[in-house]
Image (cartoon, rainbow, N blue to C red; front, side):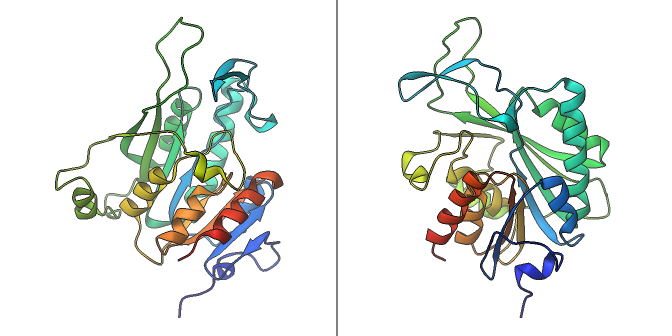
Length: 265
């Protein structure tokens, strides 16, 4: 019998929500990551702050809206952003199994710092995935090309003696028998995935489904240190993986709780 998910956490930790195979933790990721058992996590997906909430304007639902997502996303200097990324990536590395992998999503505002921080922490980048959004918001300024992509970096510990898990045959099968490429195309998050509440950077379920299927096996543990509205946890549960999610915002983690509770395995 496999240990319960709480067995991978410090005994004195407060768990916001718990099922046998899932746990949500409310609080500072920097502190809570220290309370997870080292080398216990098989896969990490992280969508850290982009640091782009600067009063800019975008379009949502046909209306102009400010690009201000919250205090957690306000702009830092490059030095501050990079220090932030180095710190949480360093903590996450301690939690990964030797053959575990990490996926990090971001835009041009943060992803270059993330890639550099990964290499500084002793990771080797496996793939640079380009997620092309088929229905991006329009470009209102008309002073640059329309922003329609995000980057997802996939990395492993830089150890030549350890092979990471990649479900190559499954990915090939899901791609009509052809090798899957590193450009993934699909729409933004649908409204039906937001019925429990909205998060400004919520990722679509199909994206996390591919990531988790590609790099984990049933029963393994997935961690999301910036869980937001809980898409990673929903898909982990759907696919029979175990899950730990962390967020410092009760509004968002309550949405994650509702979504995970509704998901049936």
